[in-house]
Amino acid sequence: MSEDSARTKKIAIIGGDGIGPEVVAQGVRILDVFREQKGYPLELIHYDFGADRYLRDGVTFPEEAQRVIREECDAVLLGALGDPRVPGLEHARDILFGLRFGLDLYCNVRPVVCLSDRLMPLKNRTAADVNFTVFRENTEGIYVGMGGQFKRGTPDEVAINEDLNTRKGVERIIRAAFEFAKETGAKKVHMADKSNAMRHAHELWLRVFEEVGAEYPELERQHYYVDALCLYLIQDPTEFEVIVTCNLFGDIITDLAAGFQGGMGMAASGNIRPGAVSMFEPVHGSAPPIAGKDIANPLATVLSVGMMLTHLGYEGDEALLSGIVKDAVESGHVTRDVGGELGTKATGDWVVAELKKRLS
Image (cartoon, rainbow, N blue to C red; front, side):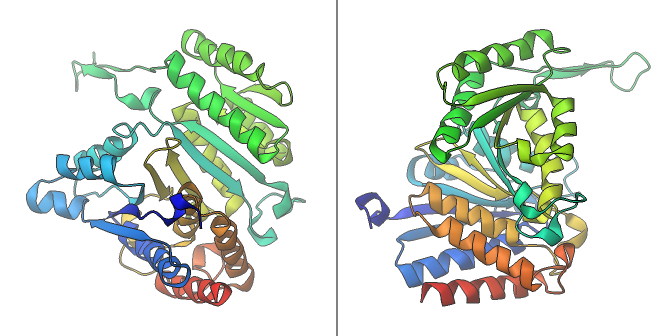
């Protein structure tokens, strides 16, 4: 174990809302196995932030917790946020944006891998045809919330949202995508924008993509308008290895791509600032209607934990967990959304048992 790997790593655990606490509990079990059987020095700091806490005492994301996460932690494991009892989502906005924007987690990294032929929804395609990674810009774009409403509720109402793009923000996410492609042996990087319609904001993306891409002559680069890219993803997913795009389009593309994986319950993500505290989360949302019913799929959380372990410097564990998840799908030891009959905890039980077996 390297000197850095031997250092105690602090991980903030935030279950959040809906099914979030249920799936995060299974992720914590995975971390506990690595602590117990491989001796990883992981310290878990549990926070009860979410709708329940907000409705109880008005707390969303206290400054002291923000300081601890920012200054002392190495990673955050987040479940999901969103609860119909808080229609304005004040708590979710404070927590999620406080993490993403507050920690400057500009790389939203979403691996898109199909782990079983039976999860592949495209005719005449196999799981081997889908293996790419999406780099979504995570701190700019339409999601910064710039804009407002005028004459709300009247026939003359005006609603405006601004799409904010900076040279710094665009360049660093594009460079991160090219660096990832270089490190992983990919041959091509795609960039999706809408510069034919959003001429000013997305011309910046197109120009920076060409400028940064020229620094990586060994990598082919291909630009598509986002609507065309979505079409080509369905027609031939084998064309894609690394995709980089803006905040909004990355959100849409990765939800589409989750269809290749067996649905949102299989989609993992990392919100990353290289070399700094980063956040990992399943992307399926809080799903309030199924909360507490023990039917939520925890495998996206398991895969997210794998990404987190790689970020923390523990090489090989992500591949190990991916292999276990693949075997769970193939053997049917999964929840109903991916063809099994198990509940959330029973699926976690199977994964934990397999992990212990393979580590022993």
